Image 1 (cartoon, one colour):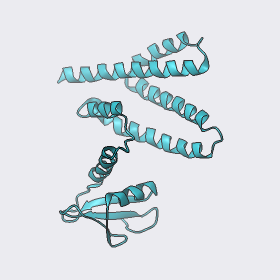
Image 2 (tube, rainbow, N blue to C red):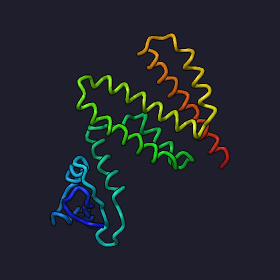
Image 3 (cartoon, rainbow, N blue to C red):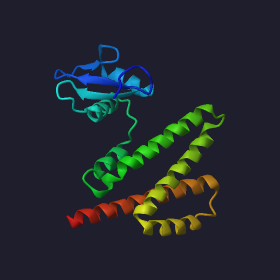
Image 4 (cartoon, rainbow, N blue to C red):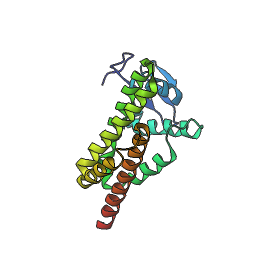
Length: 192
């Protein structure tokens, strides 16, 4: 791994036992706020234990999120946090990271489009529809019976105006998906 200042280079941050962070690319001690800024700039870094060399990047990134959430700068809805915790230890935990990464990448790409658009609300609605379609596709792979009931519900709501139809469809899809996930989790726990 390289270290340096280029956007393609991985900056190595050493974490010492006294919790201090040392940026090897600038030869200076830094804070979690500095690492947050590196993330916002799109700079890649790894945090390594100064003594053992163990990769601590995940723990430090989680710590940054925790600090933002406790400062009242929360971006994670309470229900999302509960659902996320519910996935730990279950069978869905193996699929969740790639789904969340795909969703966040899609959201980041869309955010770039929103900044350029004259009517960002229209783009937001389109993104919401794409996210729902992506989630439905993922659910079809893991739970094929869900797609048949969702299709029938969509036909029943075809007479609603477009915005109400979209909202009703999104709500119904989320409810169906949550029910299916809860059933899958219950099935997994009952097998143990």
